[in-house]
Length: 342
Image (cartoon, rainbow, N blue to C red; front, side):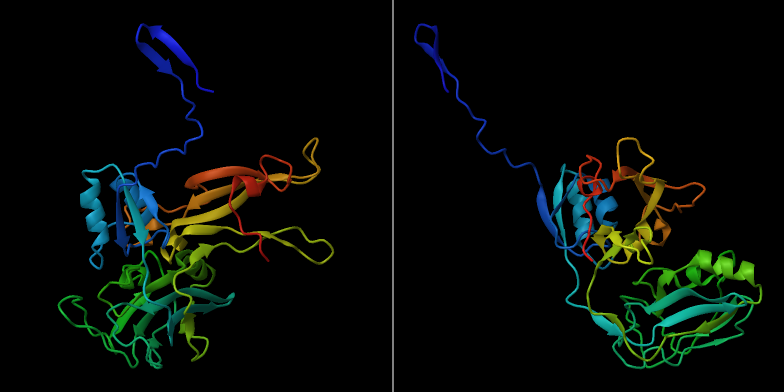
């Protein structure tokens, strides 16, 4: 309640309760809308400076003006609101090249080659269907990408038509012709294909287990690979319970806020320091740590980071002590936003 008090002749002070008024809107800066390399899509996100922008949305690249605009604007402003937009729709892809290592231990998928933006007819049903491997033993091979595709040879992309051109390559990460380096991880590169996924440690393990490892191309079938769901966030498999009888129960899974393949190379989630139910005094539940770790951002186009996470020296982003006790303040649904849908 407001009170009036006389301070001096002719001067009055009145106390007014303003606690019911809504808080003022914080500074959000200019709104910048457009494509970025990574980050949450269609979610207005405030960034505090250009370094924050790079962390959340990636650096500059030639196919979008937005990162350059953000860099220039944030050089003289404290914050900006970024809205990342995506392409017009998904697509189907026929005959991607999947390289599989075979040996005495069985089969391992090593990498998948995806057409770059310089391939001008990626919707062709015979895209890479004539691709071949030769001299494909002991981890080395000669790869020929061939099929019914052409490449954009304009000055904008400066691409070279590689349809039918052979490349000597290796799955050995220490080789100068390592396929990860040969084709890179940039969809805007001048090669006809780039490494959509690359499992370098699987490649090393294959060669260590069998020095005569043979490489083959496996597309599964002529059926399309379905990318019609557009960009999705990366997600973990379900974290499950122990088996009760013969059945395990799906408990929860984690999703990244960022959309697109970059998230696969940025972070991963580990469950560690598990204390089983019955081992904690006064509780019927156990607890555990959720650890968010870096992966290998050297594969992220224009990333300023080049580190690689290892189990012996993990690169931890953040960690959380969690419990499945719904009455605990550390209950995982209170600590983290999770997906518990089945």
